[in-house]
Length: 113
Length: 113
Image (tube, rainbow over all chains, first blue to last red; front, top):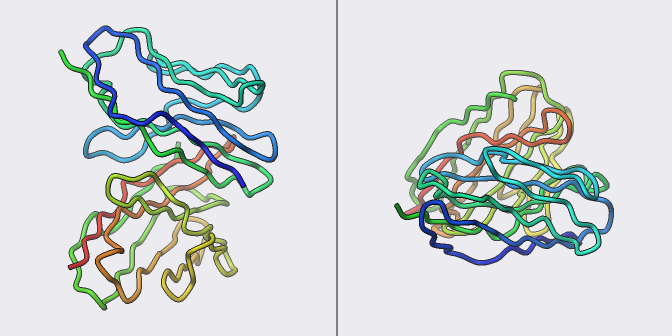
């Protein structure tokens, strides 16, 4: 079956530091890949997505590239802000499975001023 | 993106009782899903709510415990039946709106005493 593995947190950074959250996946087909973010006390928001190999998703200064050869979709941001403190979830959607999402375990990020 | 609302936003219930959670979308959508997020955990898909037919449940979830209705393309309910403290979670509905993106409701935070 499908699965998503992402690095465990919490990740604690200083403001303006570089952020990387690793995400790897296992899927039987050709999945679409997503990053969702959950800010404290809020619901889940779609941050970015990529639908095929070598696609780069980007939003709010975050980027992730769909690497089929390494089955990875690592999230990066060059200079984090305190407002980026949140839990980040990597997920995949396999069209063969009806587009339901399989989530990674989530990574809590804390950015200190 | 779709605007999704859930009722109630939170509830505290006694064990052995049932709670019905409503999910309303501001536009017609084909796919609706129900997820559970246990405390400090990732999201797990409970079922796909199918309009006009029985929901499709994931492994480990059964209709007797989590009956789902989907009377039309904008509304669904999830009932958590015969609750125990282990059912304390956030329950989220999501919809697939376009381009296989899923958008999530704000969630229902359930505490079972």
